[in-house]
Image 1: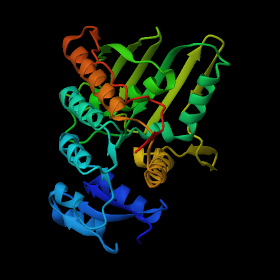
Image 2: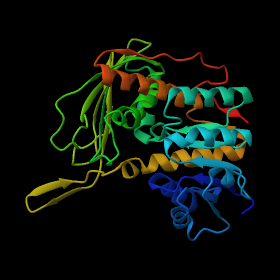
Image 3: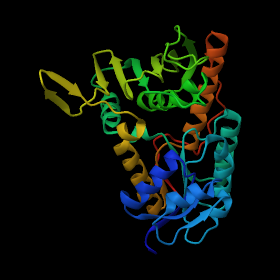
Image 4: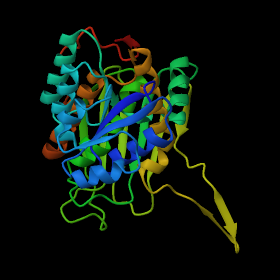
Length: 344
């Protein structure tokens, strides 16, 4: 076990439990060394059957547990800032689920704290960058064969939303993935947001503005639109089409099993993100473990986490005001090159 990267997993809910399973059963080169959750019973259930793992109610105690050399943060967003800063203080590399920090002010504090260290420790969990289809689209756009990207058309649909979901969360929780994917695919910052609101679906909970149509403008003059519909009822669907000067490319069409019987055909539709992006999560965590063991930090940075929070905040303002809202970003520290491999 001494050769394996010992990971403290903070948060044992839906996402955290899935990462514990992934580290234990799928990823090579790592093991779960500690699990923390305010619900200690839930943490214990998530860690059941694992060898040499400690269970904690306090996330900071988990960071100091024997054998911990890295941290995976899968707790609710408001707890992320404290966990990240505690990991930085201990020199521990971190994979932090999105949102890095829900509010841009707190996210900027994380960026500034890491910049003061003079080295990257954090990778942010925008897993779409590890999805095979998104990676093919990125390579195609970077190759330039289709010319300059003019527009991205995006779709983000969920079967249903949790009971605590708010209208703002359609943007700062769901569309945050499109925010990062657009920045990454285009290599441009998003500079302004407009949100249009059709009459809510009759299947949306009372008071929830669902669906929404979100329009982003970019620094390079491209447009990005996102249809977000979190109570569509029929499946989890994520699609993206890039329209360029000399062609277009679309990803996200379901390539799943089609069952034909009794004169009809039925195609399977994924029901949640852990099914649709299972391979992307596996690739993401494996890449993080491999880089950490090499003494490197790769993937989406704290700056990417901050930028996503700032754009989402502008989107929530646009939802509330009905107008076009601009995105204000602080100057980017020299530490952050979106595509750099940074040695620790």
